[in-house]
Image 1 (cartoon, rainbow, N blue to C red):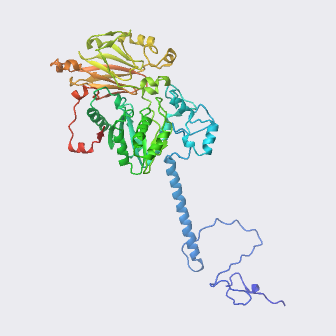
Image 2 (tube, rainbow, N blue to C red):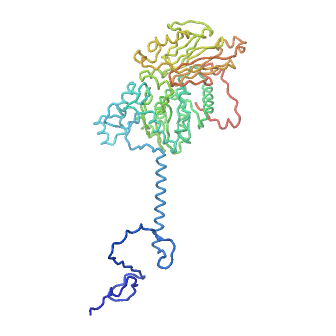
Image 3 (tube, one colour):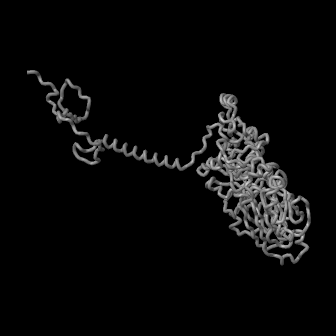
Length: 558
């Protein structure tokens, strides 16, 4: 009979507690060994594995290892849930543009070498060489080179007379490039053109800027008529800003050309930046790139970082949509970046409907000089004649080919003064002949549009607004009729030359009635008169403020 081995004495439920010298004991604690016998018949499918029950006694009680595994599973499950919630939030939150993508320093468009007609194009050899030497930040695209030489090359679809295409960037895409700002910690410098104050104001700027602090900068004040009192202008701007319910830290009147007021903005930025990035925002063609150049010029006197940044400044052009992406500028010694941002394209401005070649005619290049009627009435054939304002009733006044004003009712000495680009001429004809006159002379005498070819494609003055003005004080202008993207018309019930001579002029108070025609979708604003020119200081009235209003009201600087 063969001797029995150790395994023959062990049953499936025998405890391994038999001492023996042949089998070394590797465990200090007793353990349970379970053996499974293979059945002769096929086994049924195993049920889904289940987690061990948390409670139990005896052999069913969870071991420390089971409890550890259970806690790890719970932790991993919670981690997965949190990760899914984070992914959902990231889908809703626009991602900030990566600065790793090489962009043209002139317009911010991503550099590319495949489409010569598209923004951001660079010669392949130049691109490869600059990339090899890590100098892509010094590359300017072909479009910017043409813009710098005066070519009018639009790149925003639906603006400048173009419907768009693969080489164009839509205005909605430019807005999306700014949408991340509401989630960032930033300082916003918002620019507004004083000549087109209402049209370029961006009343819904909080949709882009979120709760970030805003410094309001008014540009191009050097274009206001000679003798303008900037104390009155500053108060007028603050009043208009408060009415629009936009909370700003301060208001600055500036000129990028003469550098007036720019030093105050630089000081305010350094004071309020506090390590944050600074974004210069505004509507298209409001003067952002010109303002940044002026800002860097002043900052370079004290900051070597700003001095080095002057070499690669954003390009300046009269074309809306010159800047096509955020342009990062290393301008601050103490940290934080300066960003030039794409202009926000507004469909209600004249620049959205005229041809790109006509865009320069919309931008005043020198100080505004009002063209008044009836002091110098210009008839349809271009001759000048004199008369009183009773001659205005029943007449239509054309402001270039972009605006028509039908005079339906005015006071005996009412005067209309047009403030805008000098290139837009004033012509007056009887209202019953206005339609025929416009069809005959648009594109030739009435420009823009310029040329018969563009005139044939011109949409015409297909939008009309009735403007009824109640005159209560004839000693001051009744209102301004502002044309978005162009300028404004000052409505004076009584010519200021007659105010002092006619002491009974107050008896003539009444109503004025005008019909203003513009292309769709250009917007017309009726606003409080801006105190422009020498006479502005004479009639402008400062509003009396309460102590609380004085405290909450933003301060203006010049």
